[in-house]
Length: 376
Image 1 (tube, rainbow, N blue to C red):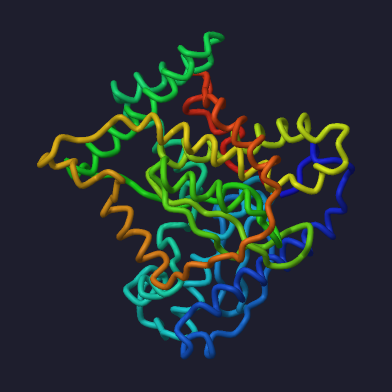
Image 2 (tube, rainbow, N blue to C red):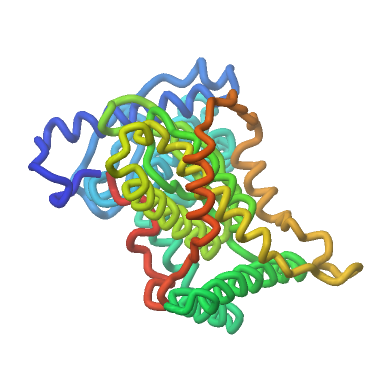
């Protein structure tokens, strides 16, 4: 949401109108995904903002109004806002369509409505918001192997190139072992979903390749979901990733790191050459392909044949897969048509990607700043 650091002051009334329009658009998008009979019977409510801080949102059957906290919509990420919105929409669905008149507020019909919407039945009152839960869960349990990974990622910032590359690849190997071990031992684990990047009307090939990189190497499941684009006042799409809190934070860091590197390297590569300026996507795809090849070359971890972990490369987490299937029971794979590629620009990007060393100072591990999209 808007902040003082984003530029000139924004008219508060206009900003609130845009937010309320966004809530209505998100509500309508969720309604379209309901069972057709439910969707036809659910009528759009009024939307309002309140200054109260005792609860994030509320549904009033008498006023037919969904009300969200101003503190929520102005100070937290849009996926956190949506989580509360869909919770209140589930109350509306239970009241107006399922007819939960004789039930408690969070009774069986309300939970059935949450299942229909993919809503979080706990996202009410002063329940910790999505980013707060992510911070808490990621830092909750100390782990000796994770500490080794932290130290290796810090070492990957070394000025000695060979030492840095070896540390990065070893950190990836240990990360694979860590995740494979958790799945093989069926350890209890929490999974959640967050947005990374910003909602937009269009996304380039670079964004889709980057999503695939996260899926293949960082133990998260990505999906492109509808989301409101605040500055365009329309619904667009955003990348959402699902996984354990720790893996989400790692993937979000990699996403931000790669976007920054691609942007910086492209500015240097295209400087003073007008012919190259329209080929930014080719360069960005090349960087990702080169980095992918570097990671593939370092995949030395192979579980012993016959071990419980042997079937987990590439890793399939049944807990995450089940969660994802419940959240998105109907998904479709979208393929894009091939476009003309400038091979020289693509190869220049690949060279950058092959030399790229992903490092993360120890102080940044466990910090939220910069890992998740800032409030719009």
